[in-house]
Image 1 (cartoon, rainbow, N blue to C red):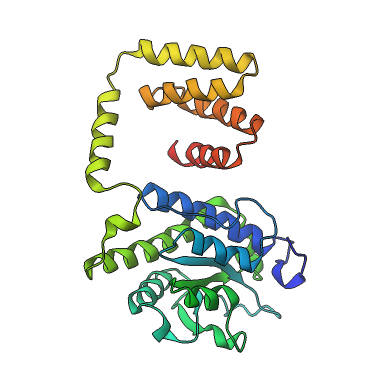
Image 2: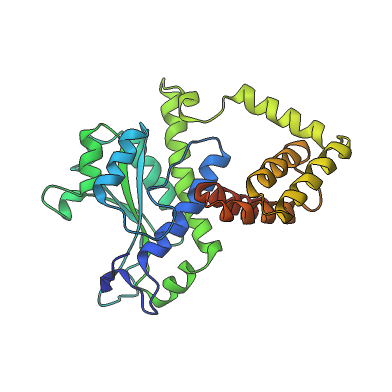
Length: 283
């Protein structure tokens, strides 16, 4: 990514690294709840403003969220509060979206959150917010805290702190969509699986706890054999079968680690990312 100094904390932690960590944690939380979440980048690489808006358009997004962190120079200890930008003025967005973000971001130990027009930054506003507004996609840009503070920068280096930020953003998003569904919208249009299907999945998972282990063992043996032969694609297929039969066995962590090795060898980056998230969060 770019090397502009205002995006670098006192000990060298860069804003884009922090933003990506929080965004990846947020993606997991959203998908665990049933939302379909798409990242504009999965790794630390440059992505244009135009491509970000195009992704929102192609995805037919119900919401575009741009995750950021702020800095100030010189550092003033009293300045470390959450805020967010919307395009032009509050009338350009659903009021419930603004209320939800203001409410949830204000619950942190950083004090009350503030919403600002992006015209304060540029005369025509911020590109992603302006273009999403043109496409009638609700969009909001959050500045969660000031990484220019030495103490805050150190906290933002930790996964647990980034997780806590992601949880706040998740609640802001989820509460907004819940309110929209209550106002006549269909929440089922915003999620991956309808409630009835989720219940079926839960019933299947419950029945798998007591399933005969012979089918699982056979699939696992085939997976291990394929892995030893460097046949990564077949190894993943058999690992998937074993995982489907019994996702609760005691060596599930090692199971997922081996699947991750296979997908890395296959250069299946998105699959690898999903496995990493599952490995980190579920156990």
